[in-house]
Image (cartoon, rainbow, N blue to C red; front, side, top):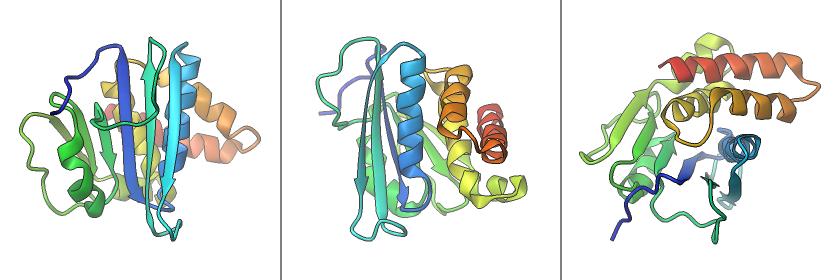
Length: 182
C-alpha cells in the first residue's frame, strides 16, 4: 500500500541513464536541504555500466530526523528517459509529482492521482548551449513544486558545488532558473 505524502518530508527519486547527471541532482537536493536547515539523506545507485547504464538517486529532505535513506514511494519523481518512467511511475505516492523529460519519453504517464509535469528538458538544454544541463532544468521544476527547498537554497548549493567553475555555474544557474519558470 502506498503511503500518503508527509508534509514534513520530501522524498525525491531521480532516474535516468548514467551520464545524465542523476547523481549530481541527488547531491544538489541534499545540499540545498542542508542550506535550508533540514535533515537530509542521499543514496546513489549505479547500473553495472555506469555511463550509459541505469542510474538513480534518492534524496530525502525533512524537518524531522530521518530513520532510513531508502525511498519506496517518492513524493517527487524525476524521469530522464522512458525506461525510468516504465520502471518507477507506479511508485510515486498518491498526490505526488512526476517530472518527465518529454524529449526522451514518447508516451504519457498513465497515473491520474499524481501531478505530471512534461518538459522537453533535452531540447531546452541544447538551446541553452549544453545538453548536460538538462538535469538542472529538472531541478528547477522540482524547486517550483517543493515544500522543503527554495531556489535560493539550490543556487547556493550549486555555487558551492561548482566553486572555481564560474562558466559551468552560470550555465547551470540559467538551466535551473528556466526549469523553475516552466
